[in-house]
Image 1 (cartoon, one colour):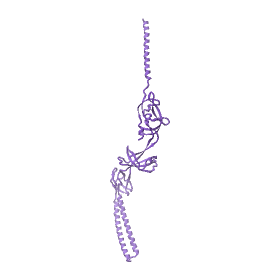
Image 2 (cartoon, rainbow, N blue to C red):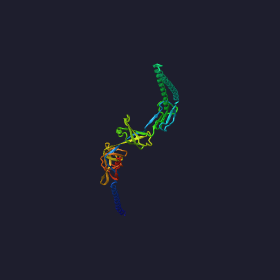
Image 3 (cartoon, one colour):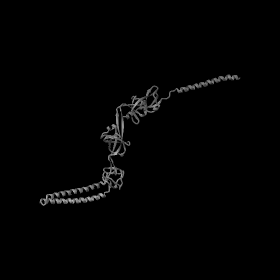
Image 4 (cartoon, rainbow, N blue to C red):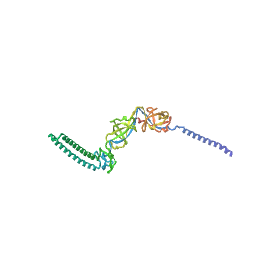
Length: 381
């Protein structure tokens, strides 16, 4: 009986083993079949490049907004300040009194000089009357010629003394007038340097006045850029993101020794609005360059050998939408987000604009969102 059980169990074990081996083979075949399927092509976005016959470069020059007139005002004569009538930030009109000096001494001197002038006038009148009588006496041969000459010289001396006394009074009047400091034009008090009671010297700056309503821009232009600015030309200046029309009112004939730039003066056309002295102004000049090439996004550039750059182009291919090729190019000019290039490109080439880190030459890709480039249109702006 045991021998029968052994003879029956051996065939069963063999059958089970064959079934298990078959299952493993089928599973391995199915797995091999699944792994042999091709992977999905990488999806990329492309743009068609368009050739441009030229491009333009822009150069920027920075300067400052200034008042057309700025004056540090002071008295022409020294003295003690008794009154200051304005403070910083005050708007004044031409002729407005800003400050006064003590004039007590001057008025006392004037009173003395007026007395001397009146005395000189009386002496001159007496000399003239004496001269008339001497001439009458000479006509009667009552006096000598020498006596008449002396009378004439005395009258002339008295008249000269009178003129000198009158001039002294006028001098005092001028000093009294100059003891009042007035605004020479409409403006705003930018700084006040003195207070009442201070004794100042002649010419010492007391108040800094800025002219209102007449701002100008002074911009230093370096190199050959000065040739783009001529008197009377109208340019657009940018100040704090806003554009203003301005006319070139002058180009200085000298170049700065330090910056090697030439100052160009602009007068604003119309209302200068919120502009203030010290604001930064920017002038732009555009230079056309006759060189054919292509505008491409900066994001589409990748480094190449020998200091060159390269771009990836999706070329048509069998079995996929496209195959990636690498094209060496030279960057001629670039802006913030685009570059003008020349090299191994042809009009209509499909340029891959992003995701360059995933690409390599020969890679099969699926093209999506294919469209034409708008960069060439921007280059005409």
